[in-house]
Image 1 (cartoon, rainbow, N blue to C red):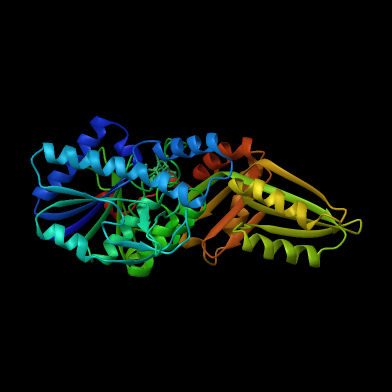
Image 2: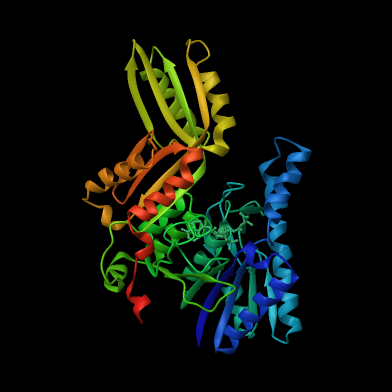
Length: 413
Ligand code: ADP
Ligand code: ASP
Ligand code: MG
């Protein structure tokens, strides 16, 4: 008998019919002779709606209370799903993160899982229960509920799969797996059959929403193979696994696996006489207040130092506040362009292939798009373009790298 962790995202639980459908899928799996731990997200857009409600009450809510609020979303799902399964005649129990023994540190709103007391779930499985666990939440050392960062139910699922040594970790959503790019944006995007942890991590970090990046870090660390697949079809999805297995399974290796994009980015440009002190201050202050700088460039123009860098769109307000303080008496001029987007081209084949850069520039120039800032890492190349150009750029790069023709062994079977 196998132990299967099945995770269902908010889009799979958006209304009563969908919840009943998910209940049916869980029961089929149970009847296949498996023990089931199902992790669920809040229904539909519940988490966003809760954030909007809090915004209407205060612009600076306490992080502790924010976690109390957001954790309620997943509790709606566990209760309703357990009711649906019960109505269909199967033994079931719902558990909050705390009841399931998921312990985290004190970082409210982006807590890290420290330990899972697996016995609590094992006890319920031994009673032949289907166990439904609220994703995205844990208990901190103060006895408070904390949340694990947006998309955190994926992390709950992978962490439980590792702690319970499950045989399978399936993450169900409204798409059939991981595609060469967002299938809602490029219609001929192709489902990838096998992708390595490192590539998936870069995709997730670069804006591909389908899996949360921290869940991939944990999957890699504990060697949890993830099957990303659809709630609404029986088709096989994408296996996220180690690089060796990907190479073994792929019919031929491809330079590029996928293209991710993120419109929620902003570019700050600072023109100032003194750089060294200011750059140091910016870096140390930003790391103190948790603002990540993604790309950085610096040059001198007419004795002025021009520094540009990219931050996540959600950090713009915080970044302005800090920059205003740091440059208070420096006669600096600061601007922020929020109408930009980052495009990332990802693939283990990019390693040692510097001509990929030339190809990317050629495709973009031919389409009349001039990339602005560029960064290259081992398996990823990212560039900044105007927000209005992003969809065209993604479509042209997808075509230019022949991604709709990408085929794995699995396609031929
Ligand atoms: P869930 O609600 O199940 O957690 P998400 O909304 O978080 O699902 O993730 C699924 C969405 O991710 C899809 O609807 C799709 O639009 C988006 N997405 C972005 N990039 C990709 C990609 N490369 N492959 C598949 N889906 C992607
Ligand atoms: N409900 C949370 C969110 O919307 C967690 C999740 O969906 O994974 O971010
Ligand atoms: Mg998600």
